[in-house]
Amino acid sequence: MRNLLFALPLATFTAACGGEPLAADAPEAASPVVADEAVDQVEQQVSLSSPYTWRTNRAESISTSIGTSTNRTCFLTGLGGSLQPAFPDDISWASAGTHIYGGEWILSINQYVSTALSTTVQCVNTAANRTPEVLWSKGEAAKLLGAVTPNRRCFLTRIEASGAFDSTADYVRVWNDNINWYLGGDLADDGGARALCVDFPEGHGNWLWVSGADPINRDLAYNSGGVACFLSELGGRFNQDSYYDGVSVNYNAGTRTWEMDLSPVKRGRAGCVK
Image 1 (cartoon, helix red, strand yellow):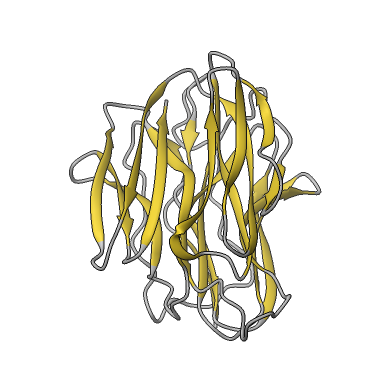
Image 2 (cartoon, helix red, strand yellow):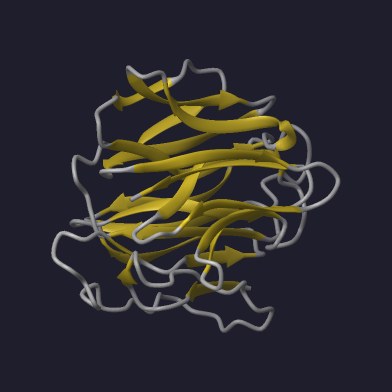
């Protein structure tokens, strides 16, 4: 089974943004339902799409377009399911997330066993000073994403694994040292991640949470108007055959607060911007 869920039309950050969890009987879709990008758009005000979620429980490689990459940038906000191989020493790679191809953002999953794997991304209508996507893999030195500038913010776009992500000690992350932005991590087995940067005028904090034997839900930033949050670090044990076992960043419209949900034995860091 594979599904694409597109929750709601685009709206400015000041509107409630977010989506409900995927229903078990969500209809199959070979292509997304993409709303007009001009809905309630205010000149020079960045807009945020509702989440796009793509999932499969088959051994297959699937992808779908979620719209233009012109003046539009997408980042990872959720990952669930299993990244583990069918047997030890299997050299196949699983991956999930988004990337640019042919002038469009592509949402994709490569799964090499018949277990659940899902990914969620959100897109903003800006590409201001966007940097090229960078790949970091286990065993490599941290990769340079770009110099620190007053407005540059960097986030994850895709996760890749061939045995990695089997404990909370395994993680990938984006960070800066006040001079440069980097992508790197610490993985016990083969794996990696991709990331890129774009300009946002304001940073509104970042939070790292690590779960133990129980799931946790934690508040991130309050949306006073125009605030959005994306994943900058992800790790933990991704070995369960469930779309809902993972890490996700979600918007709670009832409290105007961005939140992070972590299933057991996961870690996630989100950065919030405006």
